Length: 400
Length: 116
Image 1 (cartoon, helix red, strand yellow):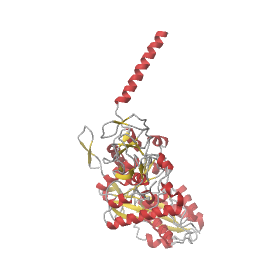
Image 2: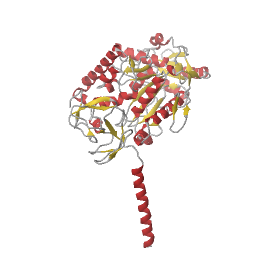
Image 3: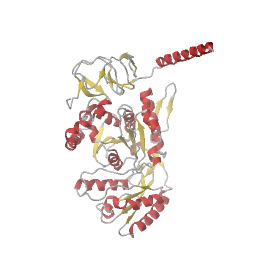
Image 4: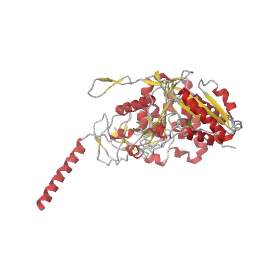
């Protein structure tokens, strides 16, 4: 953080240096994980078996891979799976396929052939069944861990960092303490040249006028307008007369009087800088600064989209207390109130509730920046240490 | 025995008084102003009418209503039709004359977007 002045002290130089793993395509990882990824839910058991034998590998069962034929669902499926292979925090991949699924290893190959990292591929139907495939996968994961284990961390610049901001399990204080503090961190990151991304389009409803005014140009403003209008229409189509519950009686009891006020509390986590780009769900930004993602509000689905965009790290505010993490991407939990911070102290990294107890925003922001730098440099966040990884992502249509 | 009890009571009452004066003495903020342009603050504790509001960068003033925790308090008088500013942005429009220190919620504002 360059430097900041502490009350009553001289300007103190703070260690701002971050180190990571430089990938062949120039991206930077803050972890060097071996990822064991199933292409389809049918082979989750094989992946779980590998996970039990090789706990150092990140093994991520999921519920996707087949059964949905719509073009949009297939696009999302291939984008998310291939983006996890490409993810900068991943140093090597063991891909476990079945053989007859939509996102088969053969189909994925063109999406991942340029990943520039070791990838080993096995298919249960042609590699001797589940037990034999697990055996091969275990050997491959161990081989890969040894292969990439010595890769050194080197000094990297902030412009290589993409940091995601997410809120989930929110309470009335989320938009007052935690998201305000995350917004201050977002502004700091953008100033360092980093990129900040947040999604959850349903939580932007009512703030189009604010977001479009902050857009870099008319094109971006137009994209924001369309994105929020779509989210609003979808909410009304799906919820019908209940759409008004987007601002619910519970929200109102918490002091939020309008949808705009509620949404302001959500979008404030991205800070106050110019919005430089709107990207599709799971798409990687090509711009720096603040980026919006056209993705859903449901925590796990939103996290997958933001991770697939290449986010190396995520801040996640919560007031009710959500322990969720994400495979290979450290998640820093920011409690919006002291009660939940204490009640779930093994899950919470930061207590933004201190803002309600007289601590200054600057102090809290600096504490969050210090922790972020330590996590970037290798310290585990709570969700990461606890292994709270979940992979689930957005779908448009029900399976058939 | 009686003397001892009286002494104990006296000591307790001194401690109580001290605690009370300390509470008044430490200027802990009980409200938060999120953005310098805001015309409302957020209550960090539940307040009764007549309580003193302290928040960063303002002179202490008195609440006119009961304010639930995390609800809004007017930082200045707000005219009918004036915008309610929180997060430095318009979040609603007032439907009544709101006095400094009054509770600001759905009874005296409306959504600019979705009318009540």
